[in-house]
Length: 173
Ligand code: AR6
Image (cartoon, rainbow, N blue to C red; front, side):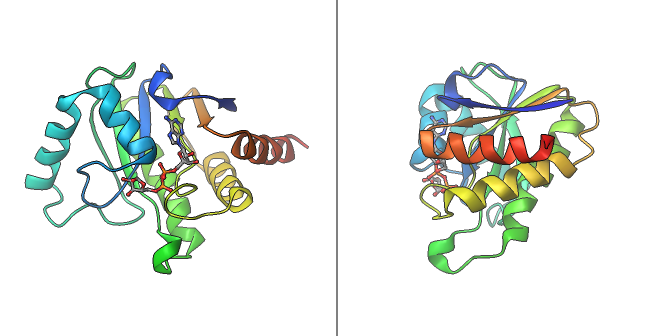
């Protein structure tokens, strides 16, 4: 069971499950959400609409996670989670941690062996890189991750990559 980091584009990361930093509507947006929907094709939006009609009619709550198929992405599933929006005063690190915990719970239930995460909350939702990295790495390291062989953080900027790498190095120390 390993945790590692890569600098790159999540939409090109082969993994059983790719985690999406979505919003509560599940109907798309900018950032990594927009990139995943663009690369996946319309099947992803249709699957999200189905979730809204059935499981989460009022939207996915902050800190929750739900899975769909992955359309044309190099993955079997996309796990959508919603980070707390600091710009709206949602500054509870526990909710950010919950995004990682619930995503790994869902991944384990699906039988995913490899999971790739972006830096949830570290874009439009305003979490600074050191905090986003600390919460992400500590939460994933503490999770039992039953059946999951590898968790990879795929970071889009050098700054986030460095912050996540520093946290991972701290785990090994
Ligand atoms: N691969 C990996 N990381 C990426 C990619 C990519 N292709 N594109 C962007 N990032 P954000 P949030 C990084 O804003 O802060 C959306 O509109 C980006 O550099 O995507 O949780 C949703 O619909 C940043 O470090 O997610 C919501 O409305 C990180 O992904 C809202 O943004 C997260 O930034 C969610 O905001």
